[in-house]
Image (cartoon, rainbow, N blue to C red):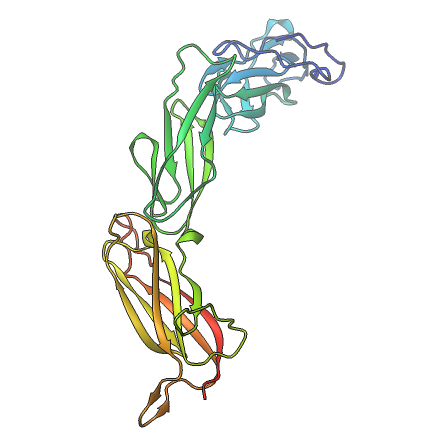
Length: 351
């Protein structure tokens, strides 16, 4: 660290533009470089005292400790009272009664040494806490589908101030173990749809951490969708559903098999709220993902011998629903439902 020029009447501050000098990890946080003086009369008879601290910013590596030296001199050589130490932010750095400082997390704090006399004398030290390693975690943010797994890649990059032999071991935590659960070797397993935060931190400097926002959601590509509605005839063509529909139609829908769990499910077709067909689904043949296409032919002009037309002319809703049993979550977590449905409006105009 470099000396700072004292300024009368107040503690000297680091000159503008002057870089913070690096302090050796574990060495003294500051030296008695400038003067921050105050005097007081002690009711117990101790003469006027002055406390001196460094007035230049000092550097400490998170996860290490150093000592903030203070000099206290009282008139007549009297024995001064013990200093009281405080930190402006104990989440960044703490200081004990002896002036020993421990860095916890990157950031800046001010350490204050106070003489508990009638008019307290005090001095301040600016301290910057830096990480022993720069943590880089990818991918971030992390977006997963239910039951999907991904691997977090973590790098601990040393800096010029990294203490020799400082551990690179990291720990990871999740804010919601039902949404995202951490497994061995950096693997993240997705559970119920929702949001969580994964935190990766240095084991020996827990304040050095990286937060990875994590979202578990059903991908758009998994979603059930009506691909087309075909007309009748030897060469069916897609219908323009802004025009009235007559006679027989074929509804074609698709989704991804990754949405279907080991217990299978079914696809239901409805027109005007009436069930017109069901397609049963088994578990994915490959145990993974893949596109699935299902179709159903519907006679919109169907008639009941007694009740007459099954579907009334005019505006109607065509609905396709993917019905799946609830999927078990992680142990101790709720099950979740990946069922889906989609609708299309159309207008019937049968004779």
